[in-house]
Amino acid sequence: MTPSQLLGALAQVVDTLTRDEPDEAGYTRLLESVQALFPCDATALLRLDGDTLRPLAVTGLSHDTLGRRFRLQDHPRLLMLLQRRGPTRLAADCQLPDPYDGLVEGRTGQLEVHDCMGCPLYVDDRPWGLLTLDALDPRAFGAVDLDLLEAFGRLASTVVVAGERISSLAQRAQREQQLARTLAEAPATLRPRDLIGHSPPMRHLQAEIDTVAATDLTVLISGETGVGKELVAQAIHVRSYRAEQPLITLNCAALPDNLVESELFGHVRGAFTGAVRERCGKFELADGGTLLLDEIGELPMPVQAKLLRVLQSGQLQRLGSDREHHVDVRVLAATNRDLAAEVRAGRFRADLYHRLSAYPLTVPPLRARGRDVLLLAGGFLEENRVRLGLRGLRLAVDAQHSLLNQPWPGNVRELEHLIGRAALRALAEQPQRPRILTLHTHHLDLLLTSGTSPAALPAPINPAIEQAATRIGLRQAVDELQSRLIRAALARHAGNWATAARELRVDRANLRRLAGRLGLA
Image (cartoon, rainbow, N blue to C red; front, side, top):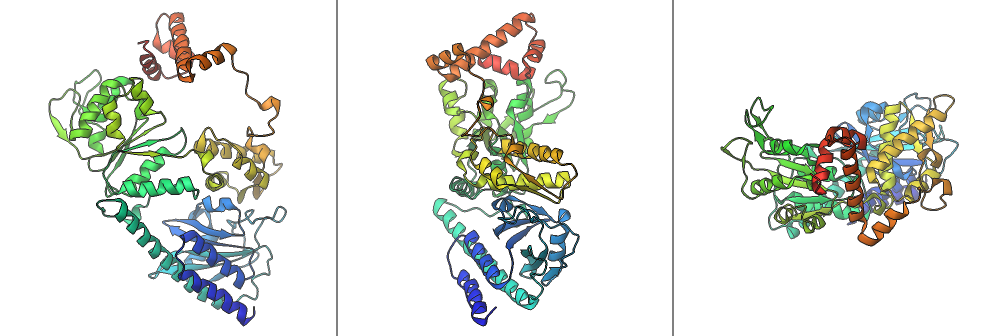
């Protein structure tokens, strides 16, 4: 490298410090400077979160790398680089598995990285993260000046400190503009779980979470099944001033009607058959913290009235007791139903709905998140790589295109399960256990949105059902079909709910709840 090239690359790093741009843009410019200085095929900037390294920016690596999380106990190569104070070049014949094997872009035949260097980054004399450089040529870094890499590492540390401070100031100014009052930030050790995504809908959701987390407003989190509503609730709690207090979750759809009240408010001994001792409910367990009521739309109407009272006054009574308890609980509610429509249909209390939706949040479906699909897939690939004991697990280009072209009716949960199944299918095809496993489209078993073969199309709909749905609407048609099936099953089994539930393959409590909603019980 000529002196002019060296000065140009260093000038680019310094220029990064003066730019008011998002962190990821600045980090990418930093890595571009690395590639200008050193003969590498791929670079990555990773931040240390506890015992896990999280990629902030990559060059030369597949896009899904940003969604992966590298636990140090699973990646001894990264651990070795991080433990050494200065830059380190690992031997080309090092037998420790490389986390980037199979992830270098544009390489289909040569999958394993052969030359690797790394430099830990320190902020306030504490390890902040890691800068890694990788090359497919085992001799690429033979003549690299490690002192130059160490100097660059110091500059990189300055860049990340400046970027974090600028980002922190911008976020604080935004909160002050949006909120009438600013509450104390949660401790750094209580960072929320990752809500992975860089798409505009996810950026908007993150901004809304930051806004509402600093208040004590009740939040109604809505969205399709599998989008990650519980994860959003966790993020709100951890970013709130209640972060050091418990987050308690109750799935309202998983309990029989006669136990919901006890689970929420507790009971005293003898309150009902089987109540052999006094027990506090979820509200008391969450006192001082946050209570997430998942599937709130399934809550029975009688319990809705009692829940409203607690939300308004903070006072509750255990089942069977006259004594009142005061609780200080922030309530978050989640649902995949249209609660406004449920209110109009008389199946949900209007006053409770308005109380719960003081701040409504809608989690975008996966099909609206664009290339976030690949980030999420990267995280699931890494989890399955560890679970299956593989050195590398990657998506081929055709598989990436297929994932980007799916409608994802099951959202993130569907993607998670699909990646797990695909990894097992691909592994079963191998005559011997591979070091690096590549997933292709045929492993994913997807119903593509275009070019679908007739054999893969869904079965035709019964004409009578289709006509009914067209005439009276889908929801009413489904309700009528469910009513007929439930009545027929009860008639066949002389009104025995347990036997009817087994025949219909549903939980008995859920069957009774559904029958009640349909006016059958």
